[in-house]
Image (cartoon, rainbow, N blue to C red; front, side, top):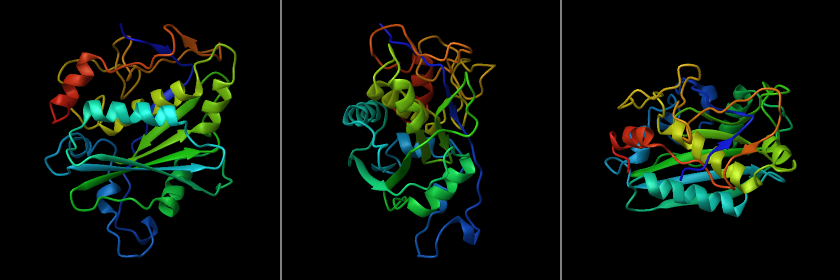
Length: 257
């Protein structure tokens, strides 16, 4: 039975087409960053298959006090192993950085933080993903709608730990680890190009009212937004939603499991 978490939050993938040819896109240190500065979903096949890249390096960066739980990281790795072909392994590293002091964040400010803090880029047959756990919220949050995380560019995402920690502390809310893992898996789905953000759907399952999301009830990629209540509604235990078959078919069509 599928588990469904209805979040009074907006899980969204933001596509930023950012040129990699300008000097301002990174320091002049000889590292080629161009392959990691592309549009959202454009590296879906590279992330999923072993045709070009046989290993995956995930760099998790957090501000002190915003470190993800070990349980969430473990569930995230399990989700990766279920969906990607990387015979030479999946490595997840974790390190802390100083606060930028810019919360609440615009996505442009997150991009600037990535320029300063990211160290892992594609190299040889290894593809790299950068995940930033921010010590605050998104600047577009409203009283009844919040952003948990955003996927941007082809190998980058941000998780708004300030928002997650606030809601996890409320009575009858899912655990912090469950919210973190659900958000990580959802945003990874956007890096995989779901739904129709770089990976063409095999069947018609896009949500016409929420771009980049699935309309099938219970799917991890469904955008469940409710206005006015301001709480989480956990329908079945503490389980994390799974991808429905339509989304799995999309991933398998470009080399995923």
